[in-house]
Amino acid sequence: MAKVKTTFFCQNCGSQYSKWQGQCTACKEWNTIAEEVLQKPEKSDWKTPTSTNKKRVSKPLLINEIDASQEARMQTGDAEFNRVLGGGIVPGSLTLLGGEPGIGKSTLLLQIALKLPYKTLYISGEESQKQIKMRAERINPNSNNCYILTETKTQNIFKQIEELEPDIVVVDSIQTLHSDYIESSSGSISQIKECTTELIKFAKETATPVVLIGHITKDGNIAGPKILEHMVDTVLQFEGDRNHVFRILRANKNRFGSTNELGIYEMQGSGLREVSNPSEILISKKDEDLSGNAISATLEGMRPLMIEVQALVSTAVYGTPQRSATGFNAKRLNMLLAVLEKRAGFRLGAKDVFLNITGGITVDDPAIDLAVVAAILSSNEDVSLPRDYCFAAEVGLSGEIRPVQRVEQRILEAEKLGFSTIFVSKYNKISLKNMTIKIQLISKIEDLVGFIV
Ligand code: TYD
Ligand code: MG
Image 1 (cartoon, rainbow, N blue to C red):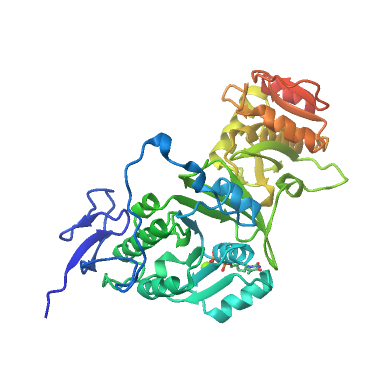
Image 2: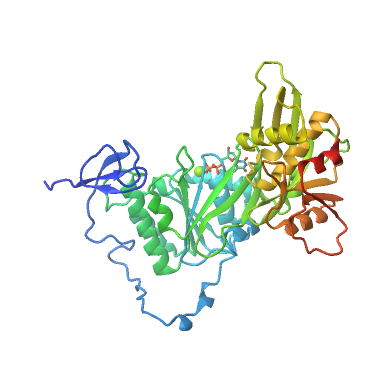
């Protein structure tokens, strides 16, 4: 019997070792090295040996002679998805979509597959054809371009692909795939690497785009070796709070476009709905003015987004006041409270402060600071802010109001949505003319206090 070849892989970064060791030399993680059975393939290829497909032979070309127009993109029929990809799917590209379990990755890709005007093959290793059909009925019952295959062995998958010749292939998920050339189990580092390599070869040789779903680990990274992210052309991240309806699609890496774009979806009973104007939903429409609410003009990627901040300031019952923030960095909240105490003389040390960003969104744009401060002051004084005020500035440690990037874009969005006044830093350079919105320039926190109290 032939000796079984094994090798050791770090389950965190994918580095390969010839023998076991306690710590990975490459990523310095402990206890991540595991043995995997490996059989070096004589010839690992996506094609079956009988295949007659012609290989495209690559030749060096002068850069000026390369025809870039052939990289025409395939429109997916989903404006948000197209936008995040930079204008559609590039033929021959490999896209990896990661996200927490239950966030809606399968739903998103099935929905896109059903809408695509191309012959699509949706391969699932996780659900049966019936289950997928049931889901498809909820989303879009009449689609006649989409084929469903439930298979996990790559050699069988490629056999079907050669027969069907799809224009786009979707794989749910890369962790369930299994190649005959490697003996370790599905989801192991060497299997993921091998299956991805085969899919890349297939994609590049036939110019068929492949979209993969990838599981993520508990700390939010895509499960499998880090090199998986290097191998693919685009890494998309689908995120959101499972208890809220909003989902955000971001590009973490994109060889064919910017990573600043993002797509917003709303999870409904009939699948994911594209949200083309997110600001309108994120701001609750109430007739009454309530204290403790302030609206911030933030940017998520390239898109301006009006977000409502709610604060509740109340007298502390216990000796140590509570501070809690949802969707906002708690350390930053403590810093802003200290600034208010020291620079503006508010006695917040004996108060409980709760902060919430509505819509289940997490914001790390520093421009939200001013709205946070305004909401806290409004709740503390129990005076409501006019509903048509909004804020966009960072607050510094000495209470100065600092400028933020792309302030004009924020102002334009605020004006479009009918706000009457926007508070920004005096140090921003603004060259907008003939605006109906009032641009209130302030330079220190006391200036804001004057407007609220
Ligand atoms: P799913 O796509 O299976 O998640 P993932 O593949 O990322 O694990 O989505 C699962 C969740 O989406 C599930 O909790 C139910 C919800 N959902 C809806 O709310 N509406 C729908 O139309 C569908 C198909 C799913
Ligand atoms: Mg799934």
